[in-house]
Image 1 (cartoon, rainbow, N blue to C red):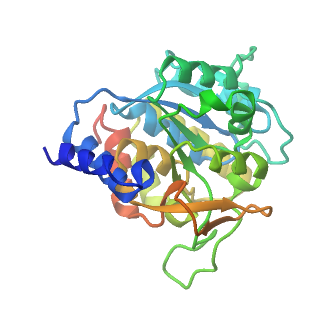
Image 2 (cartoon, helix red, strand yellow):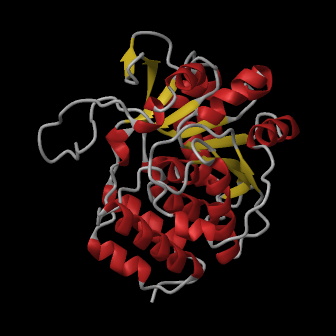
Length: 330
């Protein structure tokens, strides 16, 4: 009843889907109807460089609250990224999830998990842009596109068919920086916002997205610098499930290539927000992407719900429960 009342009240607000009221109704609805049909999602990822994409995909595959219609790869060598995704799905028992490659672009990053990808057979991957637009036409107003990559594929979708793109239910994205930049964890004075990677790598596409009119739920650096420390890694990797074993293998390749011991699970928060919106409460803002890749909060009608803070302990409790839920913890 509370969720119904909240929904009715929100229908008469001018903030609509972008307002705090809309977010409250969404969270109450998710909490009040745990047996509701899973949310239809498509994940757009640049898996293979940083390690957080793999952890984000593992979370989506482990949750009964989302139905992964497909996974598309974006930016750089999208065919090799698709090959990596296909192997991960095969190794973890999710072969029914289809994989698609978005437009390839120039990319100077090292593909840290190349060995894992190249140990799986290569093939021709169908077009990711066409797949997403076809799914939107099939399920208008129902699909959440989870963007955990530079927005090159998203820009191509908007260019190809903006009317169809506008029929997405919403975008859940890891991207941007409002008050905190890289390394600002809330313990010391912040350095201020940074041009965040997913925005910076394709600024024109980011500008198109924020002008598209699609409801955007934005997880910036302010709320996504979630450190999987040595103790947490040991607990997770010791579980011996297909998912945790493959995450451990990918982690080892990543850390060997980068010499970074501790992953930051930026992208996993974008998936977590779709499953449980209360993990990252948002504020409606009008976001403008400038020519240097900054995401500026300015005066104007809100075009995004932005999560400015999150509880790391609560997030990791949620992550472990979800990823290990089907197997139980040792």
